Amino acid sequence: MMPFETILTKSLGLKAPIIAAPLGRGSSAHFLASVSRAGGFGFVALMHMPEDTVASELSAISRATNGRFGVNLTLIVDQRKRLEAALAAGVRHFSMWHGDVAEYIPAIKKAGGQVFWTIGSVEDARRARQLGVDWIVAQGREAGGHLVGSAPIMSLLPAIVDAADGLPVIAAGGIADGRGLLAALSLGACGIWMGTRFVASQESANHPGYKDKVVGATAADLVETKLFDSGWQDSPHRVIRNSTYENWIKSGQPANGRRPGEADVISRFPNGKPLLRYDVAAPWATMEGEWEAGPLYAGASTQLVHQILPVDDILAGIVDQAERELARVSRLHKAS
Ligand SMILES: Cc1cc2nc3c(=O)[nH]c(=O)nc-3n(C[C@H](O)[C@H](O)[C@H](O)COP(=O)(O)O)c2cc1C
Image (cartoon, rainbow, N blue to C red; front, side, top):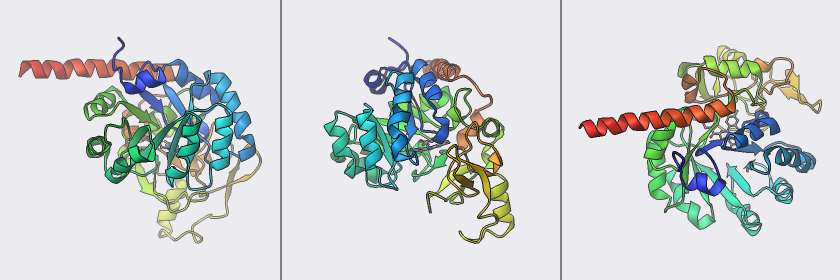
């Protein structure tokens, strides 16, 4: 038997109970294929993917991963067409958050799919089973990216496990190493869901400068803000402080519409569309222009990320460290 076999590893056929969170444009086919080959499982965000390209993008990812990946839908906009395209492309694992998940579940269930719901409260955990959710993703407030967590993962996770009525719970936020995996399993989770750690992987398609920032940042370099709101208003997110944030602070934190450089075009999307200073898009590998000015999403786990590693080494290192730590704790227990 492999170490740390859980309902998650059994259900998805994983070597380790480790999921790669959606990373914006960082979740390329190459990245997702590396995660799948290493024995993990990754999700790609369809958030702003043009509806007419969803089918072709997903079929490329499906070829690269042998169909072993899932998609993520942020429900602040109507995602029914993207869901339909993903189902038609054969996707059966759907992660959702921010919005009314109930509307989307019947179509997924009808196709025999599974629903991962990212939540941040005990109240949502109580509703999950009745809604038809298969997996709860409990996100702690220390997470990187957009936030739903109402408390840090250490207290939120066991509270959600208690309220989940037996549904399996995956832990997200603040986890980047084997100690985090072991802690999450000890607190009742069946696996971990990491974003920040995978941004700083060799294969992710995030901008290399952004990866270096994740490696260099401590918790003191992070901030929770609603600043990067073009495309997603009024939604708190955790980022590494950058020039856009510092200039906004220096100018007295003016409201949306009066912020410094509001109309600045800091780069262009691959389709030529202008990328504005306060856009939600995190800097991607081939981005030109002022990549540093965009949202550098990262969580408190940055302080555990010291190197940009291949995905394979990240997964193997986490499992090794968790085994060593388990042995250490077990010795403590026996010695008492
Ligand atoms: C670059 C980046 C982009 C993210 N984009 C999404 C997204 O589109 N949808 C989503 O459900 N979560 C997204 N998240 C949040 C993750 O799913 C996860 O909750 C978070 O990364 C966990 O905290 P950690 O960064 O400490 O591992 C993103 C996180 C990062 C770092």
